[in-house]
Image 1 (cartoon, helix red, strand yellow):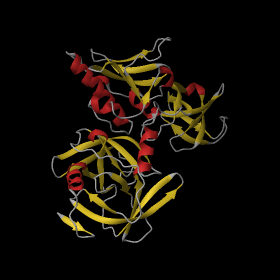
Image 2 (image 1 turned 180 degrees about the vertical axis):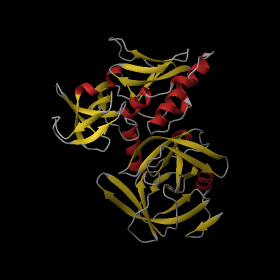
Image 3 (image 1 turned 90 degrees about the vertical axis):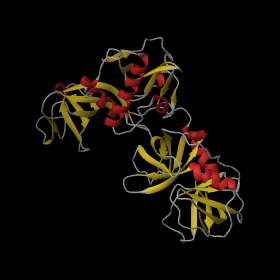
Image 4 (image 1 turned 45 degrees about the vertical axis):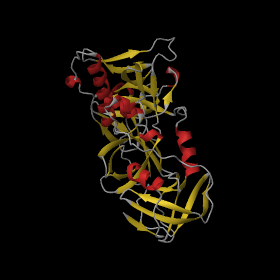
Length: 383
C-alpha cells in the first residue's frame, strides 16, 4: 500500500471499505472512480467523466469487472448514479454533518491509494456546498473523501482552477439532497409535439406554401417531430434542426403528445421510433413463464439500446432504474411498465394514448390499451 501526504496508517474503517467499495470506472477514453452506496447496489460517481455513456465498465482489484447502467444524473452538479449488475459487498454511508475546518480527513482512490488532507473550508455555489481539501495529491475524479469512520463526507470533482495541492468536491450533505430529490416521483412531462412518419418522398418548404423554396427532402418512413397542424400543412422539426412545412397528406401521425426526455431517461420519442421499427423476426414462442419474462426484459433492453440508452436485460436490475410512476394518468411515452407480482413479473413499454407494447408468450409484438377505469393496474411503472 502506498501512502501520500502525512505519514500515518489509514484506519481499518477506511482501508477495509475503500478496498472493497471504491471502484475504477472505465469509459472509452477515461479512467475515473466511483463508490458503492445504498446496500452496495448503486455506484456514485462524477457525471462529466462519464459523459453520455449510459453503460459503463466497473472494475475492482478483488472481484473483477461488472457493468453499470445509468439511473439518473445531473450535469450541473456533476453527479451520476449507476445501478451495478453485481452488488458490492461494501456500501458507504454518506455523512451529512458539518465538517470542521482544520480536521484531517482521508482520500481514497480505486488503486489502493490512501492519503490524508486538511479540510480547509466549505464553499457554496447557490444551494450546493463543496468541501475544500489542502495538501491533497493526485486522485481520480469520483473518489470519496472519508472521515476516520470510513464515512463519505464528499466526492472529488476536478476543477480548472486552484492549486495543485488543493482539491474540492461536492459535500456529503449536497450529495444526500441530490439523491433525495432524484428519488421523488417524476415531474410533469413537457409536450413538444407529435411523432409523424413520412409516407413517400416529399419536399419540406420554407413556409406553408408550395411555391416557397425547398429546404429539405424527406424520405419514405422517415420520422419527423410535428409541432403544429393546419388543414394543408404540418409544421415539422427536420433532422437538420430547421423548421419546415410539409403537406399534411404526406405524413402519418403515429404518436401524439411526445414528451421531452428527462435527465437520465431516454427520450420517449426515440423509444417509439425503436418500437415502430423493431424487427420481430427474432421473437419466438416461449415454453415457460420464466423464459417469457426473460424475453420481455430482453425486448426492453433492445428497444432502449436502439433508442440510445443502454439498460440491463436483467429484470431485477431494470427495476432499480428510474423514478416510480403512480398511475396510468402519469405515464410518459417510453416508460417501462411491470405487470404481475413481485415473484412473477413481465415488462412492457408505454407508447402513449393509454397504450403499451409488449411481447406475448407466442412470440408476437402486440399493442394493448388500458381500460378507462384503470388507475394502477400494474405492479410498478418506471420513468
